[in-house]
Length: 447
Image 1 (cartoon, helix red, strand yellow):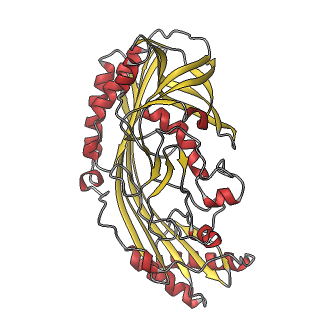
Image 2 (tube, rainbow, N blue to C red):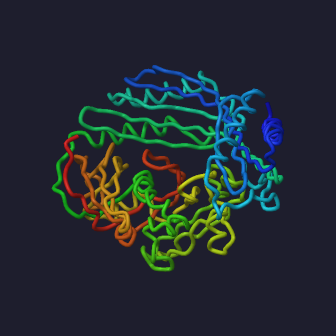
Image 3 (cartoon, rainbow, N blue to C red):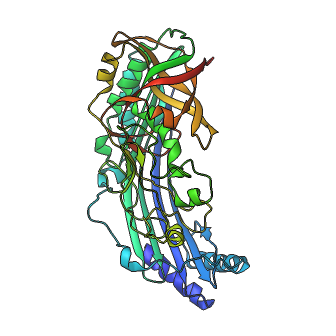
């Protein structure tokens, strides 16, 4: 059933109960995944899901109900449930009417994120690519594990005031870990277009890291110059962007409280949010159908702009930026298409210019220590290396770190080109590798 037809049934069911103000999100996704471990494919699964989420407005009250069934009876029931929930709510004097369609395009022709070859990828195609990747790792005497997935998704938002916003997108992801006794190497990548992934190259990179980190040395904790590959930058720096939110600042839970317009980072740090960046993914509109506006969050180290939902914008007397989350929610809004501006230095050039330092593939188990000072702890993983006299000389035992992001991003000495990057701790972003001084490693881990 088409999303428009589903919404028509939502409207009819609501009107039968005397409700005329209603919003619906209709999403569907087909995802297939090939999983491998111990140098063999052991699982291939596929799933198709449809979700209908309905939100009425009744006398200053709102609520949401969701179903994964698309039949007429299921649609009627989810509308009834959402209306019953809304009527139980206390009136909210700040609740806005539904968004108007004037600022809500149905499509944005400037971006193309749906690729038929990705949508039609078969288990055999994924299996061939995985077999080739496993072969590269196995030939190095190592063991491979990972996943290769492809997905085709549609997200549509409608409301009774005429908003009709739709986004279709495909996504391919490949992740591989190469294991060699006491060492390991890892790489991961994602792309809307399957043709932009190179599983064999990713596998060769993981195998090289596992080989180069064999027989790791133990270095004492301390402050070191560090070269962070893009995945490490993503997983650490990506922890702070929920704070670039007008609602978070109003609630007093953002590290940007009393710091807007201040210089918090180095001159070489510029960060923006851009849904139309060619390496980004996701819909060009937010959870109420408002088009996403490009934001300059940080300009040469100075915090400039933050995200506003319709609600936060109305309270502040400014236009919304198109970063609101579906209502109702406790968080308000957040930038979702992060881009950290890059520079000219490759990782190899950073290594060559380093007398003594540590090269880090990625970070994990990251936890916040001080929310206002934005201090985090975590560990290195899957490829940590000693750099001496401009070259990688040995693998290292992994470290725990304790780092403040404002300090780290004030100590960046070199930046590389920005690339679409996948990690484990945060959503995909466009980030560069970075070289920073005085990165605080607090102890050597035992695994």
